[in-house]
Amino acid sequence: MEGATVRVSPGQTIRKVVAGTMINAYDGRLNLNIDRIDLMLGKKNTDHPAISAWVEKTAELCQPDQVFWCSGSEAEKQSLTDLAVRQGTLSPLDRKKWPGCYLHRSNPNDVARVEELTFICTASQEEAGPTNHWAPPAEMYDKLHRLAHGAMKGRTMYVVPYLMGPPGSPLTKVGIELTDSVYVVLSMRVMARVGAVAYEHLGQRNDFNRGLHCMLDIHPERRFIAHFPQDNAIISVGSNYGGNVLLGKKCLALRIGSYLGRREGWMAEHMLILGVEDPQGEKTYIAAAFPSACGKTNFAMLIPPKHFEGWKVWTVGDDIAWMKPGADGRLFAINPEAGYFGVVPGTNFRSNPNAMLSMQKDTIFTNVAATAGGDIWWEGKDEEPPEGLLDWQGRPWTKGEKAAHPNSRFCAPMTNNPALDRETDNPNGVPISGIIFGGRRATTMPLAFQAFNWIHGVYVGATMGSEMTAAAVGTVGQVRRDPMAMLPFCGYNLGDYFGHWLKMRKNLQKPPKIFQVNWFRKSASGEFLWPGFGENMRILKWIVDRCRGRVGADETPLGWMPDPSDIDLGGLDYEKSKLAEAFKIDVEDWKKEVLAQDELFIKLHSDLPMELHFQRELLISRL
Ligand code: OXD
Ligand code: MN
Image (cartoon, rainbow, N blue to C red):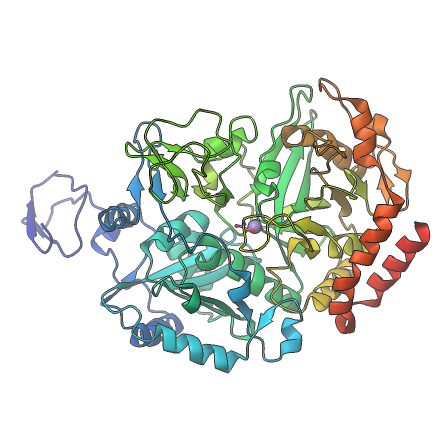
């Protein structure tokens, strides 16, 4: 009935209208039960001069057949989902088992973030620093504009206005993403607050992030993710993988965000935020930085073991924290996102029940294994693989081969999470009492310790190392320095970033305490020394107790460490000797560790704050 005229009679309810349909109400008094937005599907929905001008200019460049202005309405979701299914971009899953859920299979050459092709285009190379790929802005604009020229011919350009952060928060930012990918539009609707809220927050200001995404032909040779921090702009071409193309996430919330944060006096961090509620109902908020695919989502959604009766962990965010000193001298954090884009393999009702419940409905799965009937499966899911399983590329699966891609993802609204903290939408954020840094280290790094003070904590975070995971293209398993888990995400010189961390202390009368943890240490025979997952509550409780001044600690060369008797092992079947091994400081390993920090220190030498050199010297002398 596209383009048709429909007659409606009094009292009749119209549930669905296809764009272009004329509604002919024969009686002027007719009460049409129809959402006005339905009729406006895809129509221009702002007259903001700078947005209008930029969209027009970009449309001239990309030459789409049509421009579709997203409103964030339910009708729009339905219509775009139907379109994605017709195009084969999404496949509906079994409606009973996975209501409102869809599967997306990406191009096999496009399954992770590509750090090699990610650029920070500041005016000078020094500003981007030695750990970022840099290109002069004019050169990069020129290259990408050439690639984008006419790239949307025969396609639709979607205009996605979105908010990163809760409406009304002073930390919240507005972005507009122009994309030719329906998958991106539907995923952005999950990951950010999309629609009129963004225009309302922006008002007449012009400081919105300008993001352009063109899929092109999804070819690694024509794939670039370029950031222009000075223009608050992003251009991403040649990919359709979440981390490269959901521009609100890594690109705006971390790379551009960290740059803006330094300029404006706040911090954009690769951190989860959780609230620990004790049996008295007192809540302590903790932020924690772990590199990609090292369990941030699991930690943010932790369910305490039975033994911890009356304790509860609430999730504020699982990936990104924006933090700013409050008037009372504490550090306040918001989660700029509205959904989870989590790694699927290994997730099950034992490892992360809240993630399983979060992905039960209205979720887009990417690159998991599926049956023709719309059931899905992945490595580490509790159940046996269903009959007739197809692997992540849609090929019949044979046992012993990879079914789901190791970096397959779920994209789910955070409101699905039964443990979502009720303060998540608080525009003032939540007060952070503790910051945790954690890497994936088979050796050297003990289970937990507390830094002596803020400056020492900055050193601990800055020298963090972790084994690489499948979240980025690279050598899985290799240890690399990943300062504050921000190596791939800091939008400017890391040396200056450490300086910014040190400077933040001046505005914090009550700075959070800083901790380091390592859930991944192994014995000489290769077994994990700590059970991890929900049992991490035992370490988290010690951390909360330290923040609240309720428990002592022993001074060691690394920092304050728990007395093993202060870690509550009640109800856990665990050999106590393993705990001693998990906490062990091996001085010989530590000498190697300090030497291994040289690589980063030398790389950043000219911009590295002196405080970090001094901290390293102090550590050496303590060892
Ligand atoms: C992510 C990542 O997707 O860090 O969160 O790669
Ligand atoms: Mn991440």
